[in-house]
Amino acid sequence: MCGLDAKEIEAIAEHEHIPEISAAALADHLLHQVGGTKRIREMILDDIRIALESGCADHAAELSIGAESLCGAPSRSPSQRPTRRASTYLAER
Image (tube, rainbow, N blue to C red; front, side, top):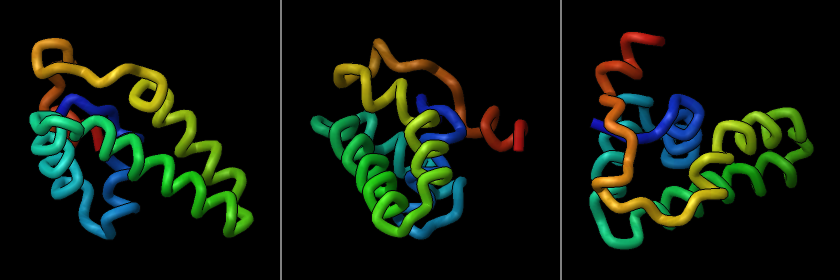
């Protein structure tokens, strides 16, 4: 369902204040929209900024590590995205 890794999904869940399964569904939706990867990137960068402003450098570092692949990558088309499904993500939890 979603082509993001666990840390990226957790960052979306944190940003949107929603459960991780809902964040996985939101990510899947956004990844199929024009500009969706950019929107996810902005969410994660916003979470990092908030963590740094709050003095939570450790949390900002965790978010940065989890977001490296998305934030450093160009926007992915649906055919270029990993095919990892949300059910796989939840089974690992």
